[in-house]
Image (cartoon, rainbow, N blue to C red; front, side, top):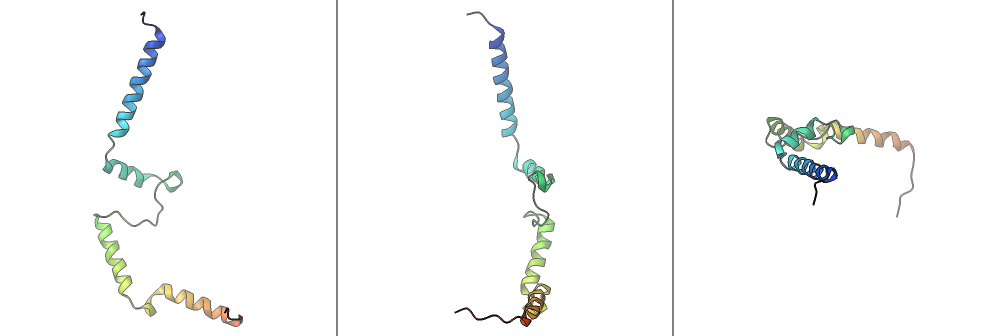
Amino acid sequence: MPVRAHHIVTVAALAIAALALEGCGSINERLSAGVGDALPQWAGGLPPDVPPRRGTPEYEEYMKERERKRLEPAGSNANAAAPAAASTSSSSQTLDPVH
């Protein structure tokens, strides 16, 4: 069987595809996590309000702050004051109770 040009092209294309798949399989978890952090949100990256990754110093600070906010009394929470203000503005309207 004679060797033809399209056989060589087919073997070369399969070899390139195999090398490309091998390259994708060798990406480790650290590299993929770093790339995911670097991508902007519009390109499929993480949104800006995502907490830091576990095991980093920023994560420890985040968890301490979260625990501190959890232990605060409900009256001193700044977010609790916003719904109270909204309910006083709607008190001028009277609504019938739902039964």
